[in-house]
Image (cartoon, rainbow, N blue to C red; front, side, top):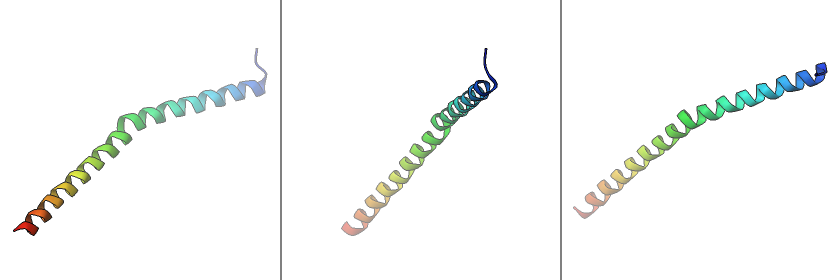
Length: 59
């Protein structure tokens, strides 16, 4: 069915495919939500500081 070289290529292909699959799962379930959440928290802090600075400027 397969020569040895074809077998090694097939195993390498399956390995790379599996690694890519689990990497995408990890990125979509942990890294990207963590990144978006951190950006939102930082933006909220900036908005709060801007309001505070504006309030102190008017007072």
